[in-house]
Image 1 (spheres, chains in turn blue, orange):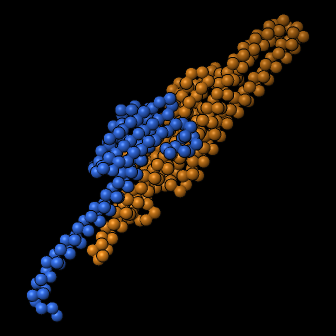
Image 2 (image 1 turned 90 degrees about the horizontal axis):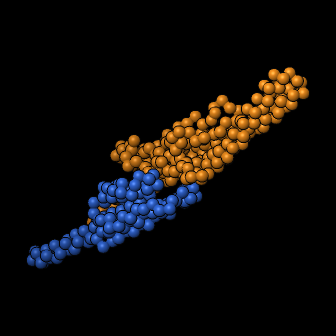
Length: 125
Length: 227
């Protein structure tokens, strides 16, 4: 059994170890949360970009589709910003360019839809 | 290591939630894309029948005029009471009526073909959705014919078939069903949420001038909430 003065000497190192472990845990948890958030943002924005294309195909108007996309994207992504939201219909095809940024990460989606793509069942590549 | 292991349930929970979210989005997207594709394919094929039916209109008009003339000749011949004239007028009338019957057969054939197109695509979509759907597929019609055309004059043997008033609405191919969004693991029982979502799509045809009929998507985007 260690003498009492030796235990007293090691008390400081236990605090340092606990702090180090806590730090690792915080970093690990934050990393996991950030990764899941970014992966979810990717899936959600991809889906909402598709919805925006269908919205354009329904001829609801670019402004209405843009505001729908923006509202739905922000509803589940409180952190990060949609920096680009270019929706347009030209010559029978519908195009969506969406860019989202958060903490130095950026996700960019460029999608297009045409009646021919719908018919070939290769919609939303 | 022990502390990291303590975080394992949290990590697993988050991964399961993320997996469930992706599953829901993928299922909705797939159901929607299948719905729109089948409705558009239906209209693409119906457009061919529609073009062919409308292309028969000039012949139908010509035969109606010939029928009127033959009937006039027939009445005049009867009034003369001259057997050769009556026989000639009857032959003329019979020939025109026969030509009309042949054309009517073509017109009816195209209308029947259109009905087959609609029912085939409905069956095809039902088969494709079998794994996703929790409710039977509905394909409500907005018109009493598979092609939204009205005969003019309605009582004629060979009428002109013209696009019905409000053609775009009447012609639409609409599909309605509900998809099961529950993930492969029993998340449903955990939160008791309604994991079925209504999917609806509707595609019609629009005349772009002349003989060109383009696909017109009336409804395609999925609702954001369960209905």
